[in-house]
Image (cartoon, rainbow, N blue to C red; front, side, top):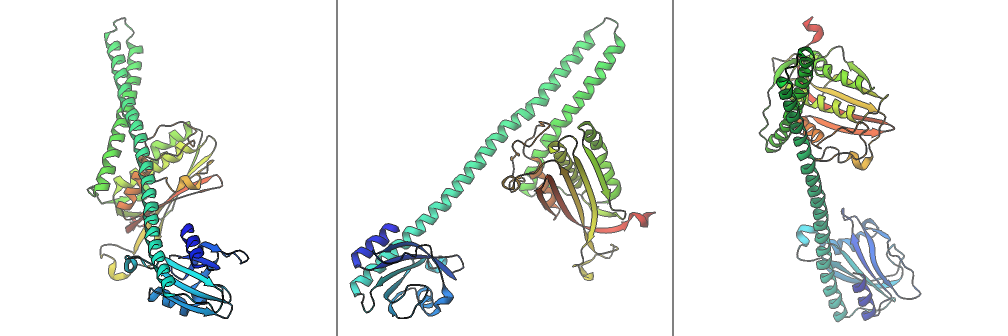
Length: 409
């Protein structure tokens, strides 16, 4: 484009030639490429506004043509000159719009011949084709880079998942061999062997649960993506369900020297919801907080119900006692800040935050991706925010009250 502008200006002996490209709203444009003869001011990079010369831009944008005029009053374009303006467009103009304009400036009272105008039109057309191809190439390159990133993430995932799947199996095999060795011992140490057997069986159970959980996560994510995930709505007392979910996690927080605080609203209702999905969402988010929270820091859970005041009475089923509401879960942890560039990718499949794991826990990069899919499956929303050593996940799920805890009592 720069070469075209320079050669055109030299060939037609003009004092200035500009290639001006429009912004996306077509209300302004920028002088992107420019040739200026010696002794004349440079204006490359200058922003031009349609509102400053509506009659000129109307002809360029609406009529998709060219016109020459003599400018005798100062405007943001260029002062005191004979001007030829020509639209830059190609055969995709109806779908894509005009790309920009070519502006050529001669001394005042000069003219542009028919041959010069024809040449400018030909150059403008070729510039439009070149620009379209450049935009397509840019878009293609962006897609290639995104695919390369995705392929790298998939490669990392396959490497990780093979390790994650192999590790429990190897542990299970070792424990089975140890149990076989214990059963073959006949030296009278029955009580000691019994204690070891209990420990081995507990380890065996833990590794089996780990393997099963990993496989279930993979299958659930596939079902959610395929739109075949089974959703089972049941009437659940939220207060009791939350306490049941966090009970096995509290010991883990204590073992990692983390403070855990829970704040349940006193009027949590019984609601109709997929309790299995809710359990998975909350468990994963709390485990995620545990994984990334250093010792001595705090993890908190706040559960409230926010009524949807926008709902109208005619949309509320008769069997429900009040308006639809949002069940809001806020999971927070202190001691770590997730960088903005990491935060934008935190729900991507296979993605794991680098260098933010003080406990060196393993992971596959599927946990938060699955959480987001489950929340969306329940017509809810989840957002993550992090600043000043505080990270929060806020989940809102639309629910309808059946009755509150106080009503039950």
